[in-house]
Amino acid sequence: MERVEAFEVLAPGILTTLQDLGRFGYGQFGVPPAGALDPFSYQIANLLVKNIGNEACLEITLTGLKLRSLGECLIAITGGDLSPTLNGDSLKMWNTHLLIEGDVITFRRVRSGCRAYLSVSGGFAVERIMGSYSTYLSGKFGGLEGRALKKGDILYRFNHSYPLDRVGLGVPEDWIPQFDREATLRVILGPQEDHFTEKGLQTFFSSSYEVTPQSNRMGIRLRGPVVERRPDVEESIISEGFLPGAIQIPGDGNPILILNELVTGGYTKIATVIFVDLPKAAQLKPGDRVRFLPISIEEAHFLLKEQEQRLSDFKKRSE
Amino acid sequence: MGLYPEAIFRWVGDRGLLLEFGDRISQEINEKVRRMALAIQKESIEGIIETIPTYRSLLVIYHPLILPIEELKKRLRKIEKHLQEFPLPEPRLTRIPVLYGGAYGPDLEFVARYHQISPEEVIRLHCSQPYLIYMIGFMPGFPYMGELPEALVTPRLKTPRLSVPKGSVAIAQRQTGIYSIESPGGWQVIGRTPVELFDPNRTPPSFLRMGDLVEFYPISEEEYLNWDKKDGKGGGL
Image (cartoon, rainbow over all chains, first blue to last red; front, side):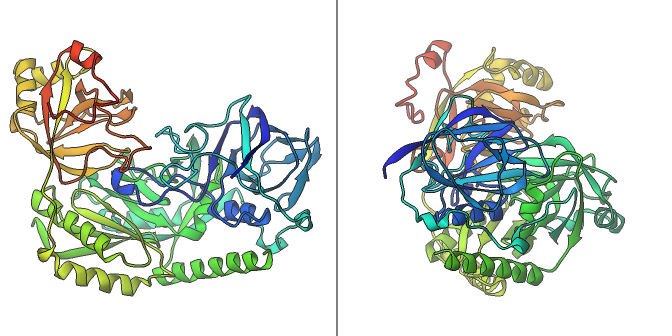
């Protein structure tokens, strides 16, 4: 498909990468999925501008990104509220906007959450590597040359027409997730819950943990009451696969919440965050607090079904 | 205990099921992991997104709305019952050239001192036998191989390095591995290979495969520097 210039990067911000839903089928070769850490906000951003497939969006972290539009295009911004502005005026999130050449989009400061998603009609045009547009930073591939955006980059989009009646389209108010500074993440216990004492499990589920500045796309180091381990089991296990949302307890007892960019490891995992709560995990930033709540697998699957239903209804409505 | 009579199922969130086949690193357990991964692949079950085989377990990632969890468990148990009939491919032997010691293998001297042998003896022992690739993981294309000769079993570094160069050949406990990309790491680095172990644009992207065998052989600095990386798809010399 034809590519057209979409944006010039005037300032890259703290960390801005191109992401889609991730790379699947390559975990057996040690390749993690990568992809949008908040897949819900990512999908809504795409649907708003009528990107039906799994198109590349920008994942914007905290603050500082500044883009200049190089042509007419339709965009939407979802996810954490990083105070986006259009030519200096506040820009409504979870809505579509028509940009013209010379328009400047700036992300000024964090109001809530940690990561925003910017979609453009047609999707950002980069090569698919192993079936995905996602940037895998440690692997240095995917997205734009396997790296974060830098000043002076020109971003292209696939040239794809869109109906003008989509300008100003939004999502129902009650759909917009609230990212509070104190989050509760629902988890499924395991796979190594039996490595911790009864007291350790109780500590983990009754405490509030602080998000430390040692946080990135791989994971979040938490600080709080130490989770007690059974004295008769080893600190590490034989390396095994895990999924985004895994909560590792290393030797020092301070939990690490895995977000992405890792696929196997030898730390014990007390629990894993359920899929529909991964967006809340992705929107945590240093200083925020988090609690964990165990639920049953049946409940998790029911919640997933509810969310998929909403997304498919929204897809139908906006076709 | 070793190999369990049947796999233990463990929860990995709401989209993953971990099949644990045994409680240690052993060829027998690892072989069962490989058989199970291949058998699942062959069945091409709708709703299984991918599987991640490791030393002694297999992570099955599934879509619970396409494949309900009880159905998944039933299917997996059925496959496991017939695993003995499932053939494994013949292992391929790959020879990997290594420039040992110096700036390329900064921990060779330590490993030698630790075992009270000469650096040359460490190299000889490291090259003395083929190793089984138990899994690819930790980073794209990193092979976990074993078992090292008893006389080379060495603990990890006390403080991991923030950056280990791509191609570094390293040992830790009974394992040996190759850093396929630059990354932080805590293994004892004894040498470096010019062979590219991972290329995102190649199919499959990983040069080495779980279940295959690797044998190391020493090369000189001149050979290392002149190694044609484009054609250097493994030794075979």
